[in-house]
Length: 302
Ligand code: A3P
Image (cartoon, rainbow, N blue to C red; front, side):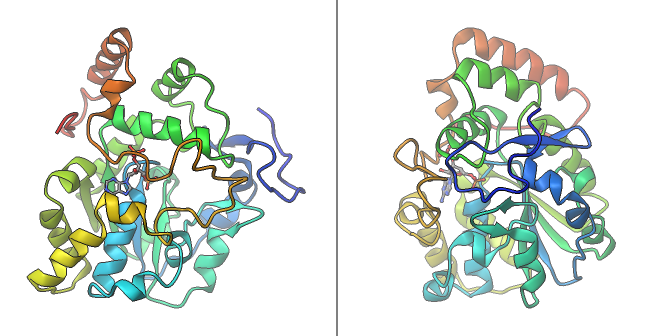
C-alpha cells in the first residue's frame, strides 16, 4: 500500500489521497500518520459526538443537531460550513486542516464528528460517558453513495469501476473498514453507553419524529413550530442549496461537485439503479451471513 506521499507534501488535490492501515482498517494516510494523537484525544464530559459509517447521513444529522442546539435559529447555523462548526476528529487534509486541532481549539460545549468504528474510538469518549448519536443507513444505498463520493472527492482513493468498488465494499477494503463491523459494533455498544442509535431511513420517513428523539437526547425542549422549522431547513432540497451545509466551500480540486454533487440524491432505494441482478443476489447472500449474529435490521426501500 502506498505509504506516504502526504507526509511531507502540501496536499492540494492534484493527486488522489493515499491510504494505509490503522489496526487493519484502511484510513487516509494523514490519519494514519497522526493516529497516536487521535487515539489519545481528550474528550470532555459535555462533548456530543455524531458517529457514522461514511455516507450514512452524517451531514444531515450535523445540520439537525446544530439547529436543535441553536433552537431553530437559521442565521446561527449559517455561521460556518459544517466541518468548521462540527470538527471531524480523525480527518486531516493538509491544505484544509486537521479536525483534531480544530476540536482542541474549540470552546466547550463541543459537538464533534467521527467515522471510526467503535473499537478505534478514542477511549476518553466512553470513559467520560459522552452523549453519542450514531446513524446507520442500509448498506446498499450506503455503498452507492460512498462510490459516488469517492468519484468526486480526491481526498479518498480512486474507487475504480462500480464492479470493482462493489467487491471492495463487500470485503471491507474501503476507508473506515467493513460496514458490517461498523454498524454491528456500535449496535452492541449502545446498551452499555450513552448512545442514541438512529437510522437514515427513519429520518427520511418521519423526520419530525426522529428530530424530536434527537431533541430529547440532547436535552432541549422545543415547541412544535421550531421542530417544523428544523424539518424544513434540513430537508434535502433546502440543504442542497445551503452553501454552509453542502460542502461547496471545499476547493473544487478536492471535491468536484460537477462529477457528482455532495448532495446527490438523498433517497432510499437508489441502489436499484446500480445493482445488477447478480450483484444483488451476491450481496443478499453475504448480508445474510454477516447479519446472522445481530438483532440489527435494515429497511431497503421506502
Ligand atoms: P446520496 O449520495 O445517496 O445522495 P454523509 O453526510 O454521511 O456523507 O452522507 C451523505 C449522504 O446523505 C448523501 O446520500 C446525501 O445526499 C445524503 N443527505 C445529505 N443531506 C440529506 C438530507 N437533508 N436528506 C436526505 N439525505 C441527505
